[in-house]
Image 1 (spheres, rainbow over the protein chains, first blue to last red):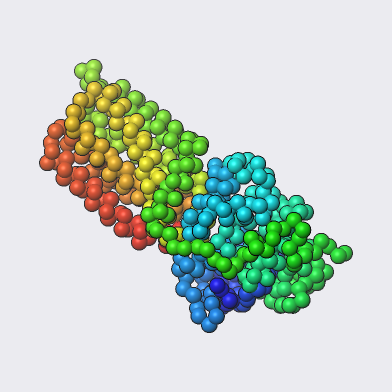
Image 2 (cartoon, each protein chain N blue to C red; image 1 turned 180 degrees about the vertical axis):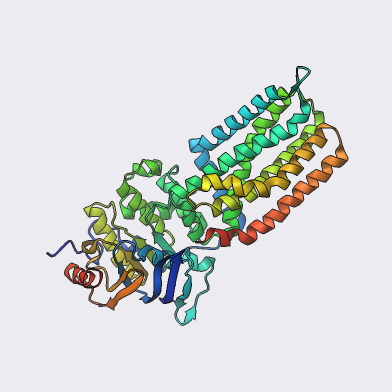
Length: 237
Length: 254
């Protein structure tokens, strides 16, 4: 289980465009980091690098388990759960089939039972589970995407705009889920523009502006909506 | 404004902690590579059997090529048997390219290629699973092309039809191996539909050449030549399997 992630002078360029510039950040277990910033600030790029799917142009990311630095291998990827902009699920398959397929890839014991438990947990309607995912509403897809991200009980949970499309009940349940993951000792990184939704859950605020880390602070007591808004406006305008 | 700050404790509609723990109590175990290959290939085929868009499009396109050319290559009011190798392989390769592009377009739509690459499944298993699925689709198209060629060009192969099946299966494997690598590599590129044939066909030339030569030798009942080109085709598949396994990960990571 990962205890911390150390991002050291990570930069990323796409041709002439600089997406990230020497970002330094430490993420710790049992913490929810709200990764904030305006559009194009490099938040999703940093999430991609943390997920191991995007290579940094410069700098390194250390995945630590205690004092030991983990290798970037198949085992490390099993510890990472990603909820991205898109669903990462197959539209022609049902919710259950999608989760069972990924359960096989992740080597999750009793994938079918785990899939059912998670679909209950994210509140995906029982009748919808056996319908093709392409027939789902945006909110239902988001619930399924969350279930997929949680499937292998990851110790690093990367969430890109997780509140998008969720109704009030779904957003509340997701907030509760993040709180549960934090209590269980996971490292949670949540990219969002919805400061209200993440307030009360996050205890670490990182703000990216133009690819640079403009703010990196922690408060074990957590941040209220007002405190998050104040910091966002102070650094990102 | 107090906002709608979310509780850190589970809400009333959240499930009991016993089943909601995100971490710890990991119940994952290493999965055999062959099982993963079967899972990826099975998933691709299940998706295709639900929509049938790739299979029907490929088969129809290949059938049209065979029919059109059977009426074009005519000598003394008979379809020219010498045209069969070229027609059959053109139909397979062009139809295969359509299927290849669409199969990876599906992975792009839900960004599911990222999901596959993010999983702990070895890249080898992901590559092999996708290759198997594409090879099976190409073999299905060949199952349409071969009888049509034999029918429209009035060819009676007898027992040699098994040699031709072997050639076509080896060709399907070679096409799927090279095609999977290039289609995955072009997944994030805007003009991938245009670029795929441009980068794919030059690499496929040895496969197409040996396939047509082997087919021509089988039609001419020239066993020695046929087996030379069949071995060439098998060697092509082996070489590109190694190259593909070596380069796949580097090509698909951003």
